[in-house]
Amino acid sequence: MRLKYLLIFFFSLLYSSDPTFCQTVIKAADFGVKPNSNENAAPGLRKAIEVCKASGNAILVLPGGRIDVWPEGAEQRELYISNCTEDDTLSKVKNIAFSFENCKNVTLDGRNTLVMLHGKMLSFALLNSVNIRIRNISFDYERPTMSELTIRSVSDTVIETQIHPDSKYAIEGRRINFYGENWKMQSYHAILFDPARQMMRYSDFKPFLTAKAVENNPLSVRFEGNFTNTGFRAGEVLTVRDPYRDNCGGLISRSKNIELENVKMHYMHGLGIVSQFSENISFWKVVVAPRENSGRIISSFADCFHFSGCKGLVKIDNCLTSGSHDDAVNVHGTHLKMTALDETKKIRVRFMHHQTYGFEAFFEGDSIAFINPQTLLPLGKAIVKSARLINKREMEIEVAGTMPSAVQPGLSIENLSWTPEVVIRNSRFERTNTRGMLITTPRKVLIENNVFYHTGMFPILIANDASSWFESGAVRDVTIRNNVFEGCGYNSKSGAIKIAPENHELVPGNTVHRNIRIIGNTFKMISNGLLEARSVDNLVFSKNKIRNVSLQAENMKLVVDLTACKNVVIGKNHFNRSASPVINTVKMSKADLETNLAVNMLNRKLINE
Image (tube, rainbow, N blue to C red; front, side, top):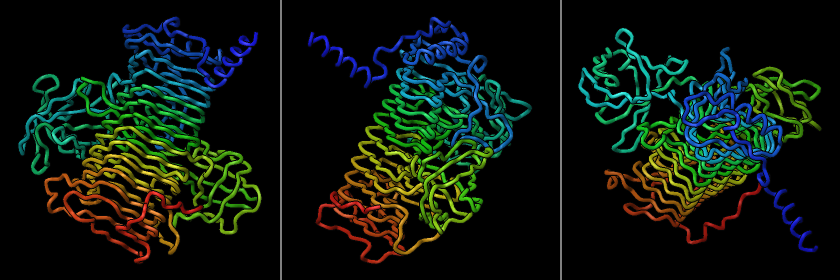
């Protein structure tokens, strides 16, 4: 009898700690989802998801093989998504392959199914849901919104190209036009990929648009025009897209405890996987890369993993991003501009960037900070008593208690409650013309044991601004350790780490960022910019290995640029070909910088809030 009760107690604990235990199994095949049939799986998936939602604790199992999903019959929702909602009157309704809304304790197990999307679609949307897992599944586009051309030969007047079979095109008159399933390219943004050097650079498709296009054979197109001094070379691949952002690869919004495991995103349109105002998100073995043997270069139209206004723990572990037109990872909040203040302590705030608006950014009980947009320094804090979205661009906030005396219209408002702790480890970030990651959160950040390979710009950028992208905020505890940075910065002439808050006014004795430790990393440099830092208190660059690997290494002098920083320690680093780097300082005294010290830099105490 005693054993019986012990077993009951054990299984009750197991069930309560793991929401997938004893889940009801729902098979998509029972709802007409047939693998390898070229039939539209959208209606069957919607029915299966409704059953999962009703059961409250279910696992949706896909049939394996390939299933195709068209917008017809798929879930449709008007969605406003951070960093990918264009400011115009066009419809914001999205087509969603897997839509989980108001769901709890649901697992989507793909059983290694390849989901082929048609038209412009979200792979999945998790809306106001809790305890959701997505695993063992791959997503791709039948016709990616990226077109790719391999240059076969080049002269001053003729370029011969081979167009990828997935890049549908037509020659109308003398001009080439790319099209897809219910879309046609209107503008052309080009990135050039050099396979020999595994590098991506900004390029220009205009010479091809003004040239005469002649089809030699299917997928073989000759361009006749003026290509003098364009710099194109045989073997390079032009990757071209319309820069209009009207979608994203996947959306996690107003949700909690989300896990993605063994998920492959082979192409994403508009932006990558966007998580906004969600809590506790884990990516384990998530791959953003073209399918093997697809011959494609690009897997993501813009960022790969984008986190806007999240909280709890954001964890990226054993992941890969390869082939994006923008950053691999971006973690940030959003500065809204204060436009009005009345005598009842009600504030009106406005979304300022044209691609971010239309969703609630503050909630009852949130802590907020009033930020001087010129200095990026806080002028006071408050608690939100109430908040409501009064139109797509503006919110009204009422604060509890006494309003800080310095508050006035023109300040920026930052949500301090919706800021995450971040762990990014054991991952690889490659093939992007921009940055490896952008990180701006005041909570603890750990970036360790990753490889950053040939990112065109800074592999890590810590920013914060209230005038361009309006992405907040200040960091307070960042550790960057045991990573490898190889061949980065060829587009920015700075190959390592940049800390660059966009504070237009420097306040003596006050810094935007604090407590950044860069320790035990390996830098394989092809450019001279080793570290750039602005407005940081307690910056440690120690025990790193720096290797000059460029052909000009013998004549390359590494540089550290510091502006308005204090309590900076640079020491115990190992250089293979040159002495310690040139250290340039602006608006700093000798007391602000310590170099080549024999003390243990790892134990430097954090600066308190």
